[in-house]
Length: 379
Image (cartoon, rainbow, N blue to C red; front, top):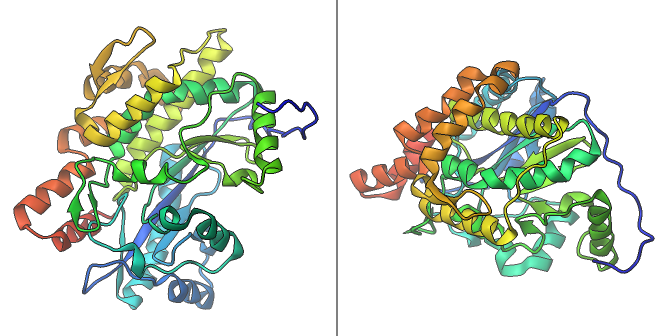
């Protein structure tokens, strides 16, 4: 930590309610070849020309093979899904015209990074200039969930507390088992790839907000970042929005599974917040245990055996999830997402995306069929 105490304060604009915001990254794939297509420019030209009513909900990303759908500020998971559904419907009308499909997974099974084009903009160019080979490799897509926090002092305890459930969220969402035409042996290769960027990966577990402010000061002073949003942690504070942003999940192929993951995230954050209100000190895992749990979930997905506590007790992640869903039922009722939370069990029963992709690959014997299957799930 920096020896200087003269650093700028960072105001956390607290949210009075635990509101939701969801960001859903989708890849653009060619209908004939099933490869990625750098079609963002013509897509956004159509969006502008047609004057889409939901244009502000459709964003560009680092690469021209990607579009991001975002919600407004929502109160419930159902509201967020309706918001995304309305935007999705408008985008799909335009992708029909361009002969492309939307693809929701953490990685594409056979695309090569060398064929991808960067979105115009100095911020993206600077990222690639700095990160070079690793930056150019970032053919990855994810889901980000914002949850409003009502007091700055809660942010860091909740962030650290959420890390205990990192493997649960990653295992459920894991959808990136293949890379550049090869089986990686990982349920989520995306999680392993993304952490190679210098400000990405697991967050530091600070105890005081002043420590976070000092960290940001050091990052800016040494030129590591220019803006707060360049801290790309898997879970991070978003002070200007008054939220914690959970960026653990791989890309998701359909709104039903997305709703399950959003509901679980919402319930976890609100449960931790209420426990703080009740005077509880939230349990935290040591960073080395959090790191191991991340790796186990990325490697083994729903078959991961996770470390539960400081005593290093271990348990199959699906068994732990079953108990967690029961414990969170009252929170889900309050947040009006009981059905969505319960549908987490359906992911486990039917198989996560990485498992479904494996099954298609084994049955069809080619990776284009995997793309077909993922595209076919979008709704």
